[in-house]
Length: 103
Image (cartoon, rainbow, N blue to C red):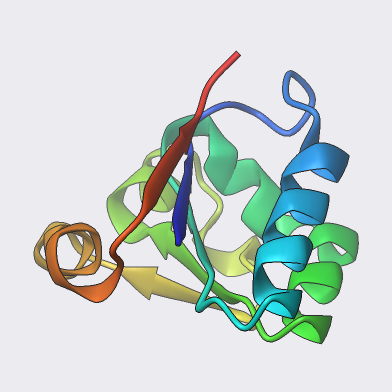
């Protein structure tokens, strides 16, 4: 399952997102989280990144969106920065289920 996040962590219920990802991972499903747009802010916050990493959930952030927001230097080292080509590959070939989290 690939969970795609686009909203700021202050406008989303990130606790629910983490719990959903955790439950999917506990059921042996391969889970990853992709931060895009304002969700890149969450890739700079240690607590959610640590909680996802504890459950072996891969984390990605779109590099161009992080650069546009001046966040490159602040992104957690647990989060892999990817370009648009890698993003398309992640969405199209790496995961059978896609969850786009919007509110």
